[in-house]
Each structure stands twice: as structure tokens, then as C-alpha cells.
Image (cartoon, rainbow, N blue to C red; front, side, top):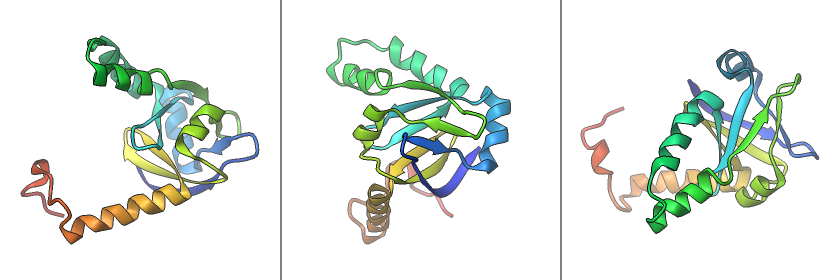
Length: 150
């Protein structure tokens, strides 16, 4: 289970150091093999390989005759990149994926349960501003959350 926000830096080669608190779990879960792919929100998703495979199979099994489905298949499966943590716990984020998500040196790794999101620092700050706007009543609460309490 991945949770929390970690501010990190990409090195000059585009490598991301996975925080130490997640490394042992990722090694035991998937031998450090991860999938990095694009997300429609313009961030990157990082999955342990075993968590990604059922998602990929489901996407591939959908009909490619539907334009929206085909676009999502292209985005998620077409951009999926197999990476492996090195001995220092780093993974290489490909140049096309860094460009897609607008990643520069400063990035934010956000735990989302079974996966991580990787955001550029500025893009993440905008996401947080949008999340705060939810309280201002711009559109109301999704029906799935009606009756939900913290």
C-alpha cells in the first residue's frame, strides 16, 4: 500500500530515486520491476508489474472499434514502459514520458494505494489548488461519495 507525498528530484539522466520506505516492499512484491505509463491527467503512473498486468489485459481486451477506448489503449498501453530499480533504488523515466508529463528536475511522488502518481512540482501544486476548490462548491460531490465521512 503506497500512500503519502514525497518531493524528489530527477537527476540529469532522468532517473528517479524511489524513496527508501518503499524499496524493500517493491523488491519483495515485484523484484523492483515497475511499469511507468502516461495518465490522462498529464502525470505519470508507476505500477509494480504484477499490479499493472491485469489492468493492461483488461484494456487490451476492450474493443478497439470505440474511438475513446482506442485512445485510452494508445495512451496507457502504448506509453507503458518497463523499468527496473537499480542497486541504488533508482528507475529511469524515459524522455518521451518526461516530456508528456512536463517533468523537470523537481517532481512529486504521490502514493495512490496500489500505484504511484508522478507529477511535476508545479503541476502538483495546481492539482492541490483544484482539490481545495472542491470545498467551494464548484460542481458538488460525486454521487459515489454521498454519505462518505472522514
